[in-house]
Length: 77
View (cartoon, rainbow, N blue to C red):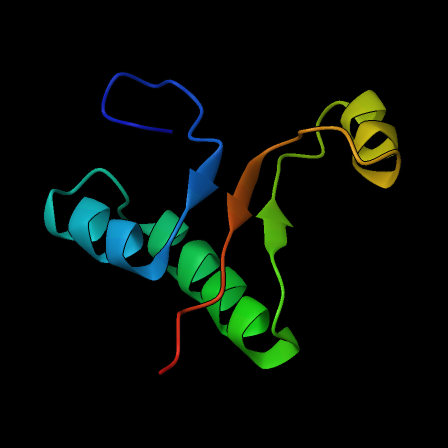
């Protein structure tokens, strides 16, 4: 979520760094976002961070619906 508590649909590594520096991503979310970025980089594809409090969201993710925040792998040259 951004500073206004609105869901961020997509994040790049650059945006993650900026939001951590701005203290928007903080505390335990830093670990979750960095783990997701590591997974995206290792897999070479996007990964999604989402809350599973509502089981319908898990089903939506399996059906390719936009759920949570999509983390893009870092760009390599």
